[in-house]
Length: 191
Length: 168
Image 1 (cartoon, rainbow over the protein chains, first blue to last red):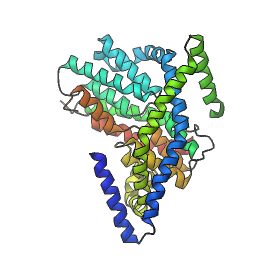
Image 2: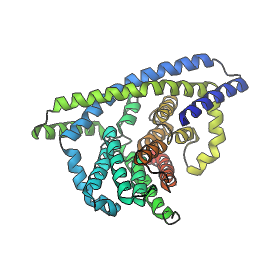
Image 3: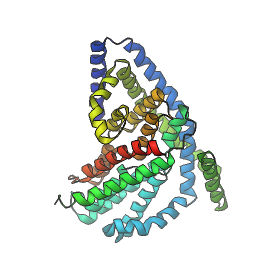
Image 4: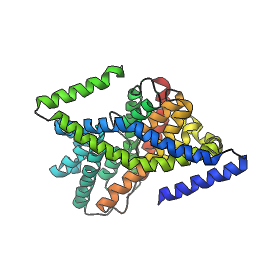
């Protein structure tokens, strides 16, 4: 429903401003936008197919599981309660590594499984501190290779689509860090 | 630097998988079909949203909005042109992709505005959508401080995107 409201507001705003400023051909703009979306999707399709294939390879080669094992001690410190339960911890580590490797379709079911188990262990309908931490790690993107953005840049003529990598890493790291600090501060205010 | 990084990464993972006895090519093809599904699922959303974005630009609403939002953008330290992207990012992934594509087309993908937009897209997520999917699936009714904490992470991501776009 949110997007339905956004859609109506965007159209109303365009029409209002178009009349106000006496803008030219809105009809042409609409048709142009729709056509460009198809061009863009087809341009992105190559990269999306390539990187999805690569993602499946990461899963099947056992690299994802290896990374999950590697990160498990570190994540155990952030999630001391979840660590007590191997199944919760397995889903949680799987979720974080899938996010790191850009395996979106694998990350979501694992994240849901982790939150479900955390809920069963807490027995409450309120989010626990560890759930909030997991949420922050999922909403602040921690993807190592932002392939969709790079594909978009490549499609639009960037000289080196992946040269934003260091900036994306630093920016992701700082935003996850800020989110986790905010969570640590906010938990005292929420009973 | 990245000119060799990506093909080297493809080679390294493929070779390792082959050594471990994985049917590499089959995995690539099967995963690739998943990618095609992804294209199919985002195309209609991109059509609607790029139509809206083009209308916003042609009508002058985009400029008016950017001007109106300039003080807020200054506060965050981001280029005012990228503020519409920051506003839509937590709500919809494909809308953010559409706005980001528009910014990169108008200003160029390698311009400061284009780079900031790309770094913003790469270092943030569809926050509200993610929270609602996770919590509704697990039957969590009181989200407590999950939303403010996640939004603080997003704001930090936007501000640092603008900063790092200039440095790196």
